[in-house]
Structure formats: C-alpha cells, structure tokens
Image (cartoon, rainbow, N blue to C red; front, top):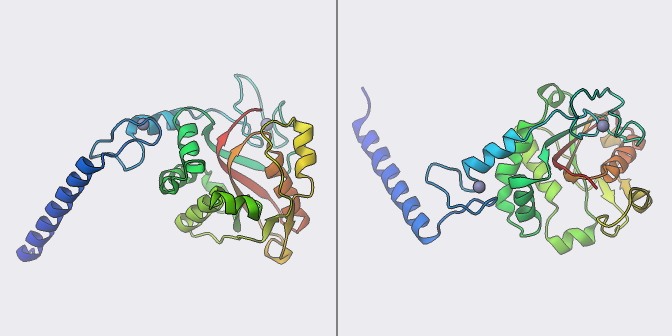
Length: 256
Ligand SMILES: [Zn+2]
Ligand SMILES: [Zn+2]
C-alpha cells in the first residue's frame, strides 16, 4: 500500500521546485551557449537540442591515429593515414567529439575564453560518448595536457584538467595532475608553422614521478588539436618516463 502522505509530500515539493524553476526562467532566461537561442523548459541548462544534434551528426570517419576526417576510399592503419604517417605522432590512437566548427567551436570558445566553466558538464558528457568502449578498459591513468603555471594563473584554470577530472569521476579512473609538468612557457602556437611549433615545444614537458606511469596506459586529455605536436611531445615525455601506450581524447580536431 503506497504511503499517501509521502506521495503528497513529493507532489508538493515537485510543484514548488517547478514553480521556482519557472520563476528563475522569467528572471534569468536561459540561453544556449552555442547559438544564444532561449532554451525551453525541457532542455538541459546549457545547450539546445538543435545544437546538440548538430554536434553529434557532424561525426565523420577519422584516421584512428591523427583523427583527421578520411575522404571516401582513404584507408588508415595503425601507422596512420596519408596525412600523418610521416609526422611521427607519438600517441597510438586519438578520439574527438567533432571538427572544430559550428556549435562545438562556440562552446569551446565560451568555456575557454569567457570562462563559463559550467560548460564542463555538457562537454564532459560529449567527450565520454566519443571514447571507444574497448579503450576505456585499457586505461590505467588519465593525464590532462598541462599548462605552464603562469598561463594557468592568467586563465584561472586549465581547461584540460577540468575535463580530465570530469571523465575520471564518471568512469571511476585514476587521474594524475601536476606530475606531467609544462616547464617551458611557450608562446602562442597560433601563428607558427609546423616546424616552428615543433621547435617551440621540444623539451617543454617533464615528469616529476616517473613510477606513476611505468608500464601504464595513459589517456591524455586536451581541448583542441591542430598539428598534434604538443600532445605528441606530452606522449613522448610520458613514454620516456616508462608509459606503455598513450591514447588521446580531445574535444575538437582543427587544421592549421
Ligand atoms: Zn543552440
Ligand atoms: Zn592520420
């Protein structure tokens, strides 16, 4: 026999909760962080269904190593695709939510530069959805691509660290923070050529306690990958410290 008193209580509390949310919506109308359209009651608090669909639909067939979209008929192997096989990327596999365009690009911009760290929730959920199930079981430890401490202080947070924490919490995986360190405060890579970028990040990372990574499979977490040189240098440093395999998970794949 259901407890009617209890049911009434739940009903009243739910009603109060809905009235409260309705009032909040009137006072502070919620908008999609990607397209600025006002959000309906049934949608989540950050992104509209339309933008979410667009991000999920933009999934393409990618090179398992570098993550670039593969044209029709293009084949990729463990060594990579025609675009990356000569670039010596030091991670084994990479996973991305989408190319760096449309709603996802807007969300990343809002997250990184407008400091809307609340976006870590939808972005974290998206990231996990794009990680291959059989890879999850292989991961021993998750490592965010580190920022130099000066840059972290300037921004107030490391976006990759927030994402890594979210992933670890959801998947119950161990995280390693402040062990892989960025010891060189490199200037912005945006205007540099591939060769200049490589020179810029050479020796930029160091591992403090190598035993953490000894014979371990590492999942490296980054926000946007352009040449892959920074992530590759992280992977090289982790492998020099004894790591077995390094996989990469990032929000977006971009081109120079
Ligand atoms: Zn939207
Ligand atoms: Zn490739």
